[in-house]
Image (cartoon, rainbow, N blue to C red; front, side, top):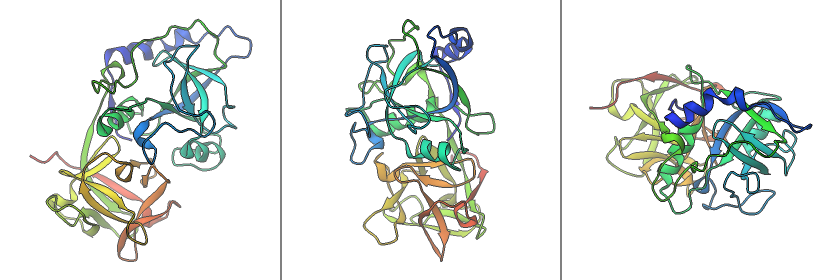
Amino acid sequence: MTGLVLGVAVVAALGTAAAVLRPSAPSARTLYAYVTYYGWFDNTPPGCATAYSGCAGGNGTYAHPITLATDKAEIPVGTIVYYPTVEKYFVMGDDCQECDADWSGKGPDGGPGYAHVDLWIGGHGGRAIASLDCEDALTQSTASGAPLQTPLIVDAPSGMPVSTEQLFDARTGHCFGGATTTVSFGRYRNAGTGLCLKDAGDGTTSGLDAATSPCSSAASEDLAYQGAFLSDRSLCLEVDGSRPGARLVFSTCDGQASQQFEIDPDGTIAWVQVLECVSDAAGAVELATCTSADDERWAYVAERAPS
């Protein structure tokens, strides 16, 4: 994930989180977890379907908590959770592949036993890119970009303060607390081949292959990463499902699931839909099962934004 800039409301919530972490219910406990967000446009096709609880939703009150996704061995289905950072209640009702991997094995963020939850932000009727940018903006990381675990109350009691501000307002595109995502510009050098990822269409021709070449100062290698999108100017890295071997292309940015990627702490670039990784192997850039092999790890070298 990229870094984030938090609005005043979010900073205030973070600053007072310790003060509200005094659960009165006998079963309540504090859990430090990596908190990420998901919404309407993360599903294929876009929608609100969940693994355990019908359509995701909720308004964040104790009576109507928002859907939460994680490994059900980490938080049982139906458990009420309160997150002080956004002053809202959530209920465990969905599965999260990355959370499963972090909890049960060696996932992209940590593990085994690494607590990770995914919170629903909605987004139906809004713009896909704005929704996904908000997800990224609310996700917290350390100064080095590593995942940051923050406190939640599990089996939370009623009566906690509840903010009426939506996590994401689909009508206006406003993100909770005015949170905004950052854009990073740079080159991605493959650990196995030493070559840099680039857009063969040089930012001008949609639908051409993602490729690698000896690292240089070419603009086609200076890629932007924002929210969930890795792009060369107006073209986004995309999974081309019409080809055998899940080849990758750069196509006109449209915010669809085929263009959503995450950059993990181990240097892998993973397609969020199936957690497969971008690989530079056998002379082609394609998706492969994530193993943290050298051909799946990319070293980032920061560059200035194009003028």
